Length: 204
Image (tube, rainbow, N blue to C red; front, side, top):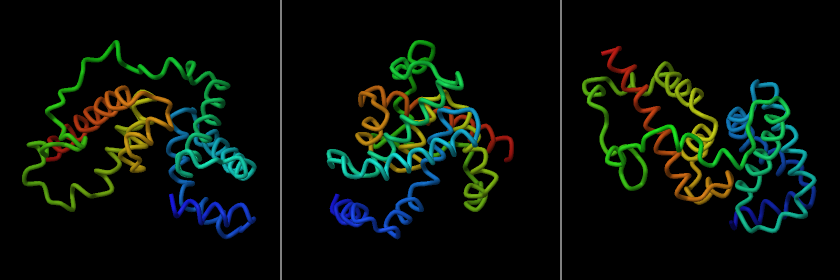
C-alpha cells in the first residue's frame, strides 16, 4: 500500500512515466483476464484499452479501500463483462458465482495443501527432467487447459495462480464469497492438473 501511495501521488500529478510504468506492469495480466469474458482477443484488447481510460479518468475518485491493483482489475472485469454480454458470450454476472457448483462433484481436498498448492507431484512426473516440466510445450498445455475452463474457474485460477493475487484480493475483484472462490479454484486446479498428468503420462 505504501508503494500505491507514492505511485498514486505521481499519477495524480499527471506523471506520464508513472502511468506508462503502470500500463507495463499490468497490461498483459489484464488482457489474460479479459479473455475469460469475451470471445476474441480484439474484444479483450478493447476492454483493456477502456480499462486504462477508466483508470486515467477515475484516479481522483480512487479512495484506497483496496489496493490499486485490485481496483484496476475490478474496472477491467466491469468493462469485459459488459462486452461479453453485448456479444452474448456471458450470462448475468450474479449467476456466475456458482459456476459449476450444481453439475460438478467437489474436488478431493487432500490433493492440495492448506495453502492451495499441490500436496504432492503427480506420479507421472517421476523421472521427467526439470527442463521438460518447465518447457514451452508443457506451459502451452497448461495454458490450453486454463483456456478450456468454465469462465469463472478460468478467472479465479488466472488471478490466483497466474497473477498471484491473494484469496481475499481475488474474491474482491470477482465479487465472490471466499468459500466460492476457494471451491472454484480447487476445481480449476484439479482440471489443469488432470490435463497435465495426462500429457506427461503420454509423453513418458
